[in-house]
Length: 95
Length: 458
Image 1 (spheres, rainbow over the protein chains, first blue to last red):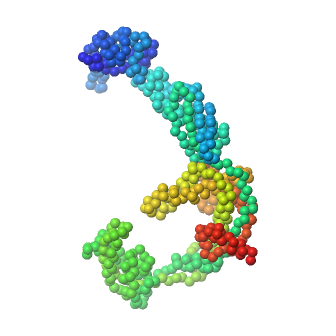
Image 2 (cartoon, rainbow over the protein chains, first blue to last red):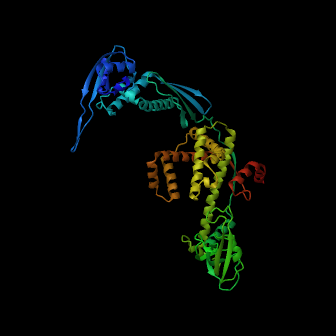
Image 3 (spheres, each protein chain N blue to C red):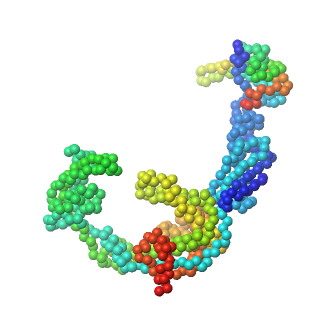
């Protein structure tokens, strides 16, 4: 798995914007199979920024029901990445 | 706010604005706070969206919203502060708003020129003494007679003459087949040489004796406007059924009774005379004001704002368009276009603009004002002219106060003209013969001044 396959996109919510502003953390949607080390590597290569810490969460897809038809949204992995002090990812500044 | 005014000419000014940074920031804050309440972005609760996110997403919209507001506010303020009399729309090319800096932009406007006081007293004018002649009245009566004419069958067997009407049936054939564009028409009354049928009809019919069948061949030219006939040769089979003569009614009281509103011939004559009289009065007024402006425009030169000329031009051209539309054609069908008219009527428009400016100046100079009674009276007159009630007209103006302002202004201009007339030296003279249209009147007045005044002395 190449580093550009790991990162799927940003997670932009109230919570993540707060975390970015207060703790210099950015949040990404990542490939379920990737582990913290791979994510750290991918972020450093893709965004050219030093990463201090990566924490991951397995997010369970919501179960959606419409009438008798029951569906399930995909599970995904969320990565909360703490950057080294002073580091920033421009991509997130522009969201 | 800072404004610098630079004069490009007496009617063109460039206003340079500088809106301080703080003011810009304040306006932006206001806009963002407003937006915060309304914006709905996924991942955020309503009203809880951080300013940064809003800026990222909506800065373009917000700037596009705030910049014109800033421009408008400061523009209005500047107009009031410097007492500018703007005509037309301002021209500008505003730069993008930068939240971190003062907002600097230029606006080019045209203003009404400042005229010096106009001395309109003692202009010498010549007034034509138009008298309604009996011949004119008789002419009108004759027209009435014509319209009341009746057609009567000619019993005697004779050939068709040029003044006759004929009763015919006709049908057109193309290549010996009945042509669907020319179906059989029965009992058509055709005035020789006057009707809508091709001229071949008249030529062939004159000299023919009813009852008989004729064949008339009409070759339509290549440039005939109707597609269905262009370049075709159509054979009309015509049956001439009878000759009719136009019988003119006698001119007497009976004739006028048929008109409805009148009792005797004298009544009609009086009414015609009144009408002609009214027309003459208007003509005199028109001629006099024509002279006034010729004089004033020569005496006072000033620059006219482009916007005013364009306004007048637009008025002229849309009037022309309406006139064409009333005749069921368009400018394009007549081989004209707005552009052609614009160049053609530019001079006229400029003159009109100048007139308005002069009258404006006189209105302010003499502090003319329209009293409520005067307004009332003129509205009443207008109501009479339009066959409507005064209330209806008042209602119309109430709905559109701008129109009322405009109307008041035209009334004031009328008053100004009256004022000039009162203060002019008017000499009367007999009209030159054949000066029935206004153009000749004007040239006569400007070129033949000398002989005209001689006449007066005599």
